[in-house]
Amino acid sequence: MIIDRIEEQERYYPLHKDMELAFAFLAEAADLEPGRYELENGLFATVSEGDTRQIDTVDLEAHRKYIDLQYCISGGERMAWAHIQELNPVSENPEHDNYFYTGRSTAVSIRPGMFFILFPNDGHKAGCHNEFQKHYRKVVVKIPVEA
Image (cartoon, rainbow, N blue to C red):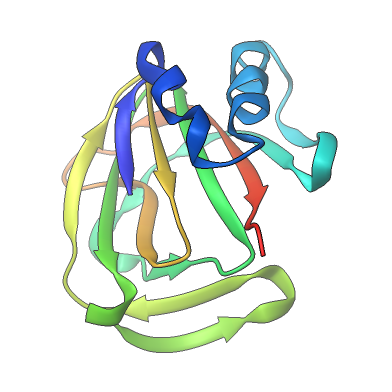
């Protein structure tokens, strides 16, 4: 997992051949309506807004087919992370590339202008809060894992 500010995006372009394309979409996403957007090379993005969920009521999830690039446009959220080898699998939905886990995780606050990148081994909870609910607006770009 990687967490950083959007101003530092260029250092992450070498991670994947389409990482620059994914970050370019983020530059356009702030004013887009919520919904799904198809990009080039099998990438797609979802712009969403909503209210955070209580962090201890949410299972960790991971994805095998996609890398997540998640960017906070406004509001904020708590995001939790743990390596899937340290977690207990509870359910899966391969059709939607969702694998769910329970276990201990580490949480961090995500503020506007911050992004995080999650790889297939990164169990995560996003869009959460500890004590006080927040309203957020964010974009998630799904980048196909290279074979």
